[in-house]
Length: 550
Image: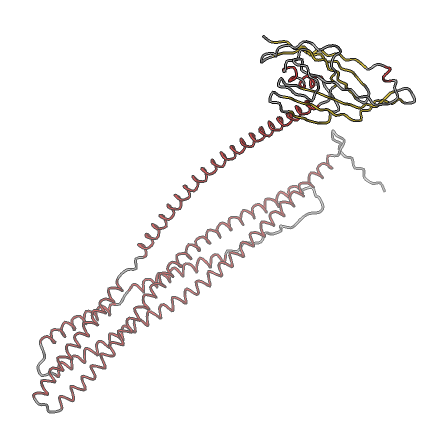
């Protein structure tokens, strides 16, 4: 049995066309699976949102049921109020009947009392007419709330019936590639996209219905608050009516007492005095009854006026909005002032930082100058205390010369001479060099004696040891160096300063050290300075020539 040979078309890069198509379809399949997962995630989110909407709808339904119960309770309360008003009207009619009976039993009715009674009858008839008419406001409010409630229940039913359908065949995947695999995946993608668009449209519709339900809920809440306020007002009216009912019952008991008393008086034989007393008592009773009726009528009319007065909620809302606007304006003004103050504080803080930076720079400069001054002062002290060998020249001193004027200039001639080999050939030892320089103006017998002309004496002692190694090399070591400088001024004071020498000696430093000596009037100064380091011993010969600028 021979196997069929499959010939693959080779591309430009040596790969099979069918293999490229397979990998491309595989990548498309992975991408479609990823999109399918994203769509499933969105479907889960939509289901969660739908469940939340169902929960909120259930809560709204509970609120509507509670509102319906409250409306029924309000209806029962209104019916109770109506029954109470009818009872009051009935009691008033009975009281009026008793009054008529009392007035009919009198022999001669008083004109004032009759007129008052007629006025009372007319007012009572008007009051009865007003009471029989009733207040249609409560019925209209209840009907409006009932219609709103029915509409909200219908909207809620529409929301509950609109449930999103589940996507069909969303998780179906194919494992084996077929010739029409790309078309199948495209068809599935189109189906998923259409299902997604339908879900989005359904969610938008549910959102719109939910917004309408929320608007209705806010309206119902406002209506409920208004009905609650009206119920409180009716409860207050009921309390007033109960008080009036109790007062009317008291009046009824008093009327019965008077009626019994009148019956007893009519049956018995009375004298003229008793008749007069009876008349006076009847008049007093009539006056009290008229006063009581007037009081009741005034209370009832005031109650009717308060009941007919409309609840001014819009005016209170406008006043509250005005106060809130005023408070917001005050708050904005305070905020603007606070921002301005903050800007001023920031500018002041920035100026303070700049001044602090300038002060820090100035302090650094002052510290640097102070350090430089201390270094210069220390250097001057070192130069003043540096060792040098001064030797007076052989022969008689030169004749004194007059002191130079203020400004002098000098030139320096330096000669460097190495020590002779016979000195280096010595094996160790200590050598001391002492030199004394005195002013040439006056001769001194001793360096310790100071005259009024002024003397500057310099003494230096240095110990040097020289040793040789086995190979013939020589080494010199300085063991001790001391120097003393005596300054004598015109006042006769003397200052002694002792200090150790530095390791290196420079010719310029020696020039600075002896500048005061030159200014004191000396002609020529020859100074031998021994410079030393680990490898060399040198001899420096300094010659100072002083000449006047003038």
